[in-house]
Length: 364
Ligand code: GAL
Image (cartoon, rainbow, N blue to C red; front, side, top):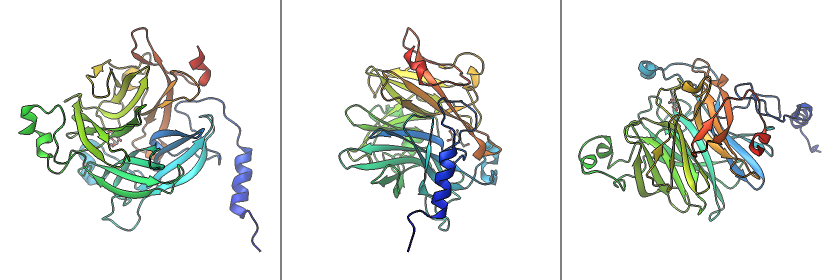
């Protein structure tokens, strides 16, 4: 007869029961999960669903190496392991839910082959189809593929089924294409095959319309691209924003009807001054608000790069800036920088360093 609990499950239960409960966020320190293991979810995003927060990110394991093809720009990497998931009810204590989209070990022709690139996964829930939809940046080792990947699941904790990758918006011009854009430049070059899509995020608006923001045109210009009602494809309506501003690591949120945007500059794993912007409509016009960071470390975004903005449930206008402190020589040891977002009198985003903080900062 089988017993209900395997020995492994029993040991995990005992270990997790022994973990001290956390009640604060300590940016840059080692964050442990319910098993006492380092939380491994880089370039991540958070979904809130039915009373639980789900954190998804790049699981980075193994040796960090610099492939020959990336030597000129210092593009170190680890082999892809997959997308990890953690759940929490309080944003401090995280339960490991496993690798919800694993890498493919043995098929070099597969998008998710461990020698390729899988970055910045973001999961959204589609109420019409009752599916959880994951978007991610899928690339070749040398980052020349520059594509968006999509996977789906019936559950927030997976398993996710990988559907496909593509370059968005093949054969369509953006709503604001200038005459010159249609004859010369990268937008025109990629018109037929689809637009380059590297760093990305997904934003779901109050009316449940979803949008992909992606660094396009070889990272020179951001595109905002509307998704179909099932969230699986672009509709073909898209816009070029921040032309030539070389922004990466986009994060988007909405406060009191206004859309806010945070991103980084384009310096690979090295930190740079963050960017921010605001708009009355998702389609713009977007007004740049400059580097939102103040105080010591502001010029390097406190040695980090944005990845997501997390709306805190049950509090009004409470948002957490999520960022990665990359360690380019030992990528699995990259840390997490989460900071509360403040707004000044003029409505600009303000980010300040905190060694340790909790959600009571939003009550002030
Ligand atoms: C960064 C980008 C990361 C990763 C890295 C590779 O600029 O934001 O997601 O692609 O470059 O060096």
